[in-house]
Every structure is written in C-alpha cells, then in structure tokens.
Amino acid sequence: MISYLILTPPGGPDRDHRTTRFVADRFAWLAFVFPGLWLLFHRCWLIGVATLIAQVGAGWLTNLSGLFWAGTLAQLAIGLLIGLEGRHIYISTLIRHGWMLSDVVSAPDLSTAEAFYFSSAAGDVAPATVPTTDWSKFSAPAGAPARGGPALGLFDIAGGR
Image (cartoon, rainbow, N blue to C red):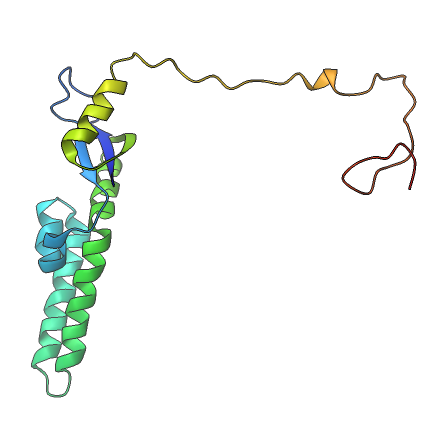
C-alpha cells in the first residue's frame, strides 16, 4: 500500500478538483538518478541549486587523483538522500506556498486513492463526535468525609493495607 498525501491549492480546491494534487509518499527513482534537476523541475529552487552545487563538487572530486571513490560515494549519497526525501521536500515547498494538506489516503494505486478521497469528500460521512465525560458525577460531594487515607497503589483498599 502506498500513502498518498492530498494537497489542495491556496483558496480551496476547484469545483471539479483539477488542481488537487495527489503525491505518493514513496521512493522517487528520477530524483535518485537526477537529484538536482528533479528538485528544480518541482520548483524547489533553493534546495535544487544547493543540490546541483553539491553534485558538481562531488563530480570534481572524482577527477582528482585518489578521490574517485569519495566523489562517487558522495554522488550516490546525494542521489539516495533526494530519492528518499525528495517528495517530502516537494510537499514542504507546496505547504510553504499556501497549499493545504487535506488528507492522507492509503491505496494500492493512484486511481484507487482518488476514488477513496472523492467518495469521502462528497460530504456523505458524518463528522465524528468525541464523547465528553461529566467528571463532577465521579467526585465525592464537598461535605463527605474521605474514606481511608491516601492510596499508594493503583487501587484504594478502603483504609486497609
């Protein structure tokens, strides 16, 4: 099962939900292969530029004698980090620009996630109510004498030990 984060644009979704975005919370293979370009494509400008600079630096390390493996491992680490966290960075960027996280749906594929979301978004589901407890019914009356002493364990044994 894949978790899909549903984001609605600033000002609320359109009537037909064309601007509502479903972002899968999973590994991004294109972000692993092309980390900086993937971030720039998704308009994560600051992190995208920083990633491109880090990639150029790691590529430069591979050309220095004796540092080939350090540069290669740095490139792999950058790709792995952005592959794992790229979608989170993208969602955070959208939220900073006013998008709202509307819901999270777990489904095997995108079409099923859309069906789950839009079936519950129709308003057929009644809002859940939280039961409240009137704690005044459980406390002893103000003038009643206390039984026994303070209980040190889980249960009071009416003054017994």
